[in-house]
Every structure is written in C-alpha cells, then in structure tokens.
Image (cartoon, rainbow, N blue to C red):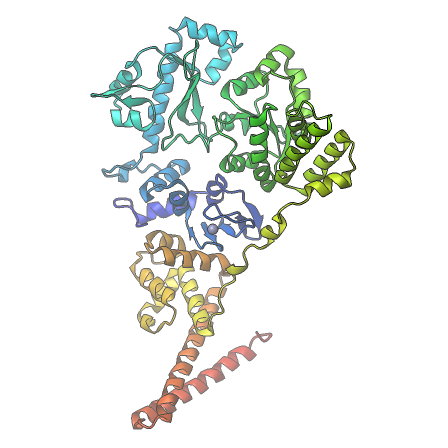
Length: 602
Ligand SMILES: [Zn+2]
C-alpha cells in the first residue's frame, strides 16, 4: 500500500481527511456508536459480537478479532478488492477532489469516466425510445406516465447489434471500456456487439444516483424476460438496490409509516409504486437480500415492508433476511396482497389509498411465515397433515432470530393447531445453543501483558505519531537501536522517512506502511489509546523519556550484575556498574520529586 506515484502525499492526506470513514464503512457494516468509536461486526471475519471499530477522528478502522486495520483506502481495497489507486480514485471522487492533474498513465479504473460512459449510454437509450412506438405502447400499458419515464430515464435498446457501440465509439469510448461496463460484448471474430438489444431499458443507479448499469425487459415472449448488466467494477447486484438514492430521501419522518422503506423484488414494481406516491420503495436486482444491502437500508429506515410472494421462494428469502434484519435493528412486516397480485398491479387497480393502508398495517412476519408454511399442507387439519406441517414449522421456528418472534410464532401455531403453547414450545425448543455461541465471542482480544519498558516505548512512539514535531526534536538522540519493541523500532524508522514537520501523521504512516502486520499494530495502537490532550503531550513525553531511561539503566544494571557475579568482571565493568547505579539513584530521586509535586499520586 504505497502512495501512488505522481500524487503528492499531501493530496492523499487531504482526501483521507475529507472522507467520512464512518459513512464509507457503513456501506458495508452496521455501525453503532460506542464512546468515541463506532463498532460493528467485522466484515473480514465471521463473528457474532462486534470487535470491529472505526474511529471517526483518527479516521481508521481496526478489528480486535482478526487484526485487520487501516484507513479509508485500506478498507475499500480490502472489502472491494481494489488497488490502492482505485480506492484513492473512488474516495477522491466522493469528496470532490479531482486527481486528473496528477494522474499518469496506468490501467487504474477511472470512475468518473466510467460513470460518464454509462450516462452517455443512458442518454442514447432514452433518445431511442422516441422512435420505438412498440416500446412506448408497452410502457403505456404498464401505466407509466411520461413524467415517470423521464424521472427514471427509461429508454429503448433497438433491435440492432451495433447501434449503441457505434455511438459510444464516436463519443470517444473504447471497446474495452464498453465491455468492461457491460454495454457490449466481444464478437467471435472482431469488434464488439451491443449487450442490450430489442429491450426496454431501465437505468440502474448507485446509492448516489450515478448510473452503474441497466435492466432490460423484452417486449414479447423472448428470453430471458429480464436481462441485467453483467457484474462490473460499478455494477454489483448484491450491493445495489434499485431506487435507493431516491427512496433514502423519501422515508417518512412521521406518521404511521415513519421510518418505513418498502422492499419489492423487481424494478417494475418499484417504479409502479413510486409513480403512485410510494417514493420510499427499493427493489433488489434478482438476488435475495444481502447483508450489504441490509446495512444500507438500516442507515435510512427503521422498518422494512417486504412485498414477497407467500410461496416457498418468498418464505426462504424472508427467513434468510431475518437474522440480518434483526442484527441491524430493522423491524419487518409483510405486505399482504390478494393471491397472485403483484404490488404494481394492486396499486394500479385498487389505488394508492388501499395500498397505503396495507403498507401501514403490514402483516407481522411470524404470521406470514406461519400461513405460508401451513398453506403448503392443504391437509393440515388431518392428523397426518398436522404432523407434516408441524415438522415444517419447527424448521421455520429455528430460523427465527429472536425469542420474541419465536414466542409470536408459537402462539400462532398453538392457536391454529389447537395444541397448548407449552407443548408446541417443547416440540420446537430443541434449538442449538445460539446464545452460547453468541457470547463466546471476543475473549482472545485482550492484549498480552506488556513489560513496562515496552509500554513506555509504545506510549512514546504514540506521542510521536500524534505530533511529529516532537519526534523531529528528539530524532537525533533517540537511539532507535536500543528500543526493545520491534514495532516501535520500525515505526521510528518510518517516521524518519516521512516528509511532514508537524501535525498528526498517523494517517500518513498507515498509507506509507507496506507491512500488513505493522499496519495492524498501528491501527490497534491508535484505537486503544485515549486521545492525547493538547497540553498533555509534553508531560507524557517527558514521563516516557524518564521511564525509558530508568528501564534501560535497570536492564543494564542487571546485565552488569551478572557479569560481576561471574568471575571475569574487570575494573571496567565495576566502574560502569557503579556509574549506572548512581545514575539510576538520581533518576529515581527525580522521579520521586516529580511524583510528590503532583497533586495526587499516580
Ligand atoms: Zn475481523
């Protein structure tokens, strides 16, 4: 993770400084404030209780479970598998710093240009819709208004193999760029051909409203009915939510639906609902709800309303989502619609008011799961049917994330089957010890006991990282070789290589540090140390220096004692022993003095 050639460290520092690491990490991890830090479940190793911390002021993250740590760039590199230049570029774009003036040649992803490419394609598709009466007809039949088509920039990919790619080439984009972002595919012989053909296209945007891909729907009976952009550096269906950038601003702040987001399974449903005033609607893009998506939703919403079909797929998707929602603090209810009617159809035929009522009075998730499971056993009233249904119920019960929802579920089962709650609970509660696993969490994170010498060294080095001018003053007399702690030695070397003369350099240090283990050490160190009080730095430094000196003298004294005890000690050794002893005594005296001059003993 070395700094990028051509881009000055000061610019990199500025980007890190401006970036909101908490919000960047929040795209992937549900963070809760705990003291000065934010903490959450580590995305880099499997854990049940949070040992992953983000420090908003120091702008670092560190996991006390698996040890990873770094700055905002390091986080993105790791979680999105980006190179340092790509991570830098990404954050720079977000914070509005243009790296173009510093950029040399290279194969790094140019996100600005990639978004421009997709924007150009979106514009082109949009224009094509004007000359495609069949497509306009189809959209009109689906009840979409001109305003909605404009808002969502819905377009048309003509029935042509080269129309878009030719246009993009003329606009200055290369074939590599078109294929990299899923607009074209490499032909068998040469050149490329358009990826979307003879389809209505729905632009898909990222959380900030920038175009990242498209969904295309055939007009007739062609296959596949829906075709989405292939995965690319911009388009990742497991992370994206259709319409999130609009919906996140439209979550009701008050009223019966305060904090509610609607989740549907396709962009057609989302657009239909949106047009009828449900702007707080998002859609998944052909995947079950992922953890990354739940994390995003949890930033904006308190309550999710799922519009899933009560079929087996819907039950599965709901059960999969439940633990994710539980751990993110989102509550869930289900949108209950007449059988076989999808949300878009319902809102068109029954109107917005009827829909709103159903959103507000969402079905409790336990009821949805219960009914869907029961209805898979049409003979559930017979003894055999009852037994089979109960077996399925046990399966569902075990996947319920909280005692409360388990209790709700049990009540329903008992009620419907005419069995006592106690009996239901007995038959279901042979549940694996989830709780035990949860509490057996991060016991191994407590640091090993350090010698007072190493503690003093680390405190000193910490002071230097937080104010490098202190290091500059002491630089020449530090005797780095005498440091016992290998981490401290290497940090001191790195400090010597930095160009800064003053200020906190911990961020810069992390980005120039190429050693993973050392970087982990630095972020851990920064995370656990309390912030340095402005005026306290001088005093802490003086304390540490004295202590270091004391420990070094003591260590030397012990060595000399050993030499004296063995026979071969000459006069020189004896002389040094005497000198060290005296020095130590006067140092201890001055330490005593320093102590007694303080208002209270430490
Ligand atoms: Zn971890």
